[in-house]
Length: 149
Image 1 (spheres, rainbow, N blue to C red):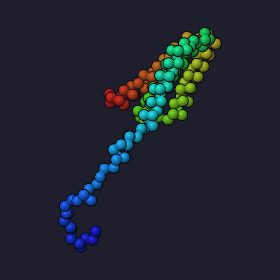
Image 2: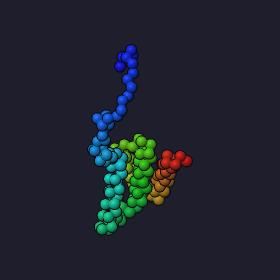
Image 3: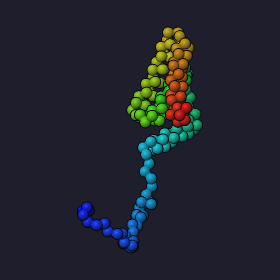
Image 4: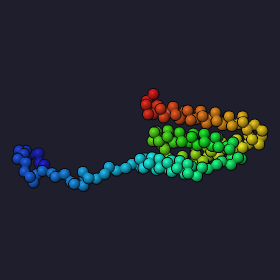
């Protein structure tokens, strides 16, 4: 627009001036975020795992039974760490998998060495305490992130 030209008065609105809404705009579904897809996949995986466990009734071999509670607590530590990382928007799936497997293997190795040295119960208690402290620290960070408290 040239600054020397006078401004034109707007005229009456005609049917050619109106903008018709696009049909595809109103009918298009909202895009699904990758986080939502990941959550759905996780829930489906959990439900499938529970269903398989209920149907097959798996049993833990006797030699593996001392390590199972430690492995579960180590896995919970990784899961709480992943939840915290997700809320802080720094979650990386590769880090989660490595943390999950690494925690379980290191905890089982410590308990195994404790059994071989004759101090298995003391080392098991130590592993549980350390992992529990980490779980509670992650739970506190999750609570602060969600509730601001």
